[in-house]
Amino acid sequence: MHYLTIGFCLVSSFGLVGACQDPTPPSSTPAVAVGVAKAQVAKVVFIDKAIACDCTKKRTEDSFAALTTALGTPASLPVERIHLDTQKAQADTYTVFKPLLVVPGIYFLDANNAVVELLQGEVQAEQVTMVLKGG
Image 1 (cartoon, rainbow, N blue to C red):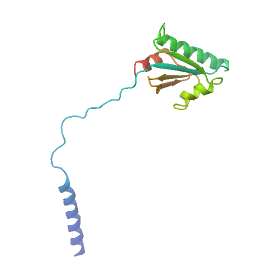
Image 2 (image 1 turned 90 degrees about the vertical axis):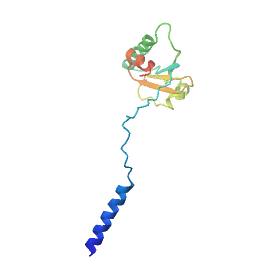
Image 3 (image 1 turned 135 degrees about the vertical axis):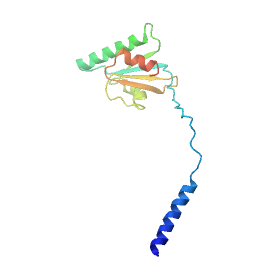
Image 4 (image 1 turned 90 degrees about the horizontal axis):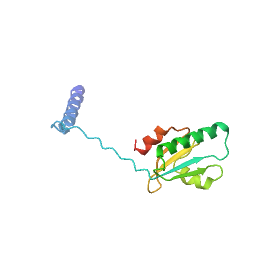
C-alpha cells in the first residue's frame, strides 16, 4: 500500500512539473550578439625606467620606436613619457588603475583619461596599430 502511495506522489509530482512548462516552442529567431565598442584612444602614456640594465633599455627604446612608427609623423595622438623610477607620482596616476608588471608600459587612454588598453614589455608597431584600430 505504501508503494502505491509513493508511486502516485512521484507521478503526481512529475505531472505538476510538466504542467508548469510552457507548451509553445521557443522562437526560431536566433539571438543577436551585441558587442561593446571600446572607447576611442585620445592619448598615449609611455612608462619606462630612466635607470635600467642594457637589455631593458633596448626593449624600451625598441618599443618606443614601435609606438612612434605606429602613430606616424607627426604623431596622430599626444604621447607623454614618464620614468617610473624618477617620476613615481606621475606614473601612479596610471598604474593604480592597471598595474604595470613589466616595463615599458604603454597606456592607451580615452578622452576622460580612462585606460582603454595597456601593452607591457617589448611591443611591435603592429600591436600598437591593433589597439588604435579598436581591436
